[in-house]
Picture 1 (cartoon, one colour):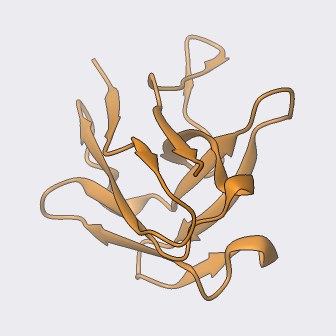
Picture 2: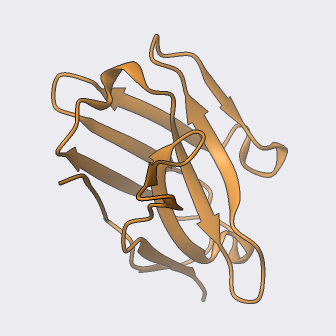
Picture 3: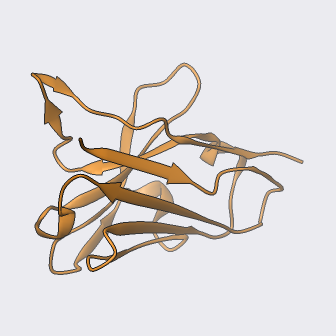
Length: 119
């Protein structure tokens, strides 16, 4: 059974840093492009960072220069280093393949990890 488990979210103040982790199981994700997505209250889920199977990374403009995505395919993990956090980064963060995993005809999503940026 496939699982993606996100962790590391918490309440931080603006300007602080946070590192999110995602552990995959039930499948070798090494050959997949992996992404970090986020969903802020009242907004649609968006892709903020993506890393290819070869390690090439791309970011949405709003996080460029502040976020860094990395992966360890041997450990089936994907991380997101977030620096200079802003209140608008507040969201539930999810990792997934890109495009998202389809299981039994539906997109699979883990439980996510909540990041709150507030003073």
